[in-house]
Image 1 (cartoon, rainbow, N blue to C red):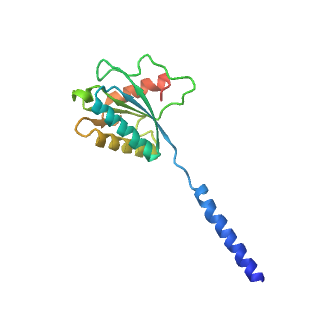
Image 2: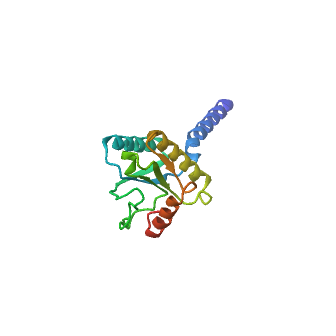
Image 3: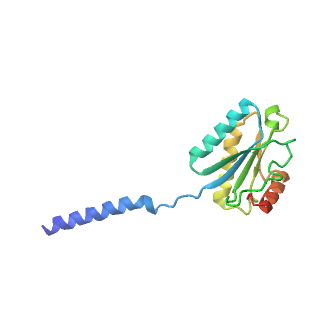
Length: 165
């Protein structure tokens, strides 16, 4: 009888341990992404929707979307716009310029802090985001981040001052 009670207690402890295991696992942080869409054609709109869907489906990215109307591909799409006071800063800002429609600009800007400053997790998120966007916009554009061009670095400095990042 004592052994039977001991075995039942042991099984109960094991079941409690197994049920508590998922709670003990570390949940990765969510990367907040602002996607700024300057495109105007139906094809580009479908690609943007596909990008947003793919990123949200991963469960790693919290994606917000903002439509912008810029005069040229190097215009700051957030110029003169301040973030809402209760809004948390974004980790990454992805700018899909108007030139993707006409293929006059093949640069998709991925704005982040310097890659040497980011954690390894955030750097992996930058690489993952870049790969997803490059696959969706293959033939139309290529993602350029702060390690490849100065423009995303200038935008990042401006967005930090304004409170976007």
